[in-house]
Amino acid sequence: MLKRNDRDGLRHKLAFALLLIVCATVPAWTAPRERSNDSAVATEWPRDWDGRTLRPLALSPVEQRFAAHFPGRIARLTDGTQVLVLRDVQAPTRMLHPAADCYRGLGYRIENAQLERDNAARLWRCFVAERDGRRTRVCERIVDAQGRAFTDASSWFWATQLGQSTGPWQAVTLARSL
Image (cartoon, rainbow, N blue to C red):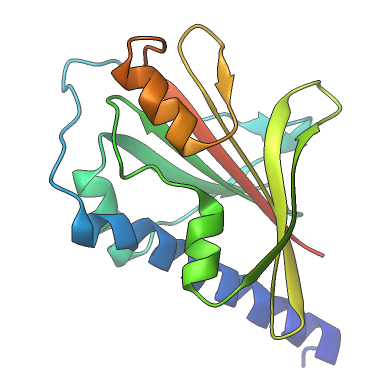
């Protein structure tokens, strides 16, 4: 039998997985269908993140339907302490939007939004999402084919439209329970 803390942790992980599903599907309901370039070469997903081995997490049927319209590929992985949502983006799209928007739409309060550098000097937009006493730290960034990083989807999108950024792009969202 699971201890109370183990049950709470499992419930939190399941709630977070549901949140990711909802966040992934909202743009599909409102955005026009955009297709990726079928001739583009897909990159392999990483096997580790910052020295920790990654395990793939299955996409739900809802996430699979969203991915069918996304101009690229989507993967969910975990290193045992956090969930990584990776998107290999082949074409500029409004389907790539800020994680804070998803969390707010699901009733989370967003706090401590700020830019931060990690131990590898990568710049991230990070925030804490809180709802019903549960807190999740979320960080995100987008990197283009030349290594230029963007900390929000809007600046990335406009850079693509102005010819200042070319793909493919990798969007990374990290989330861990606090």
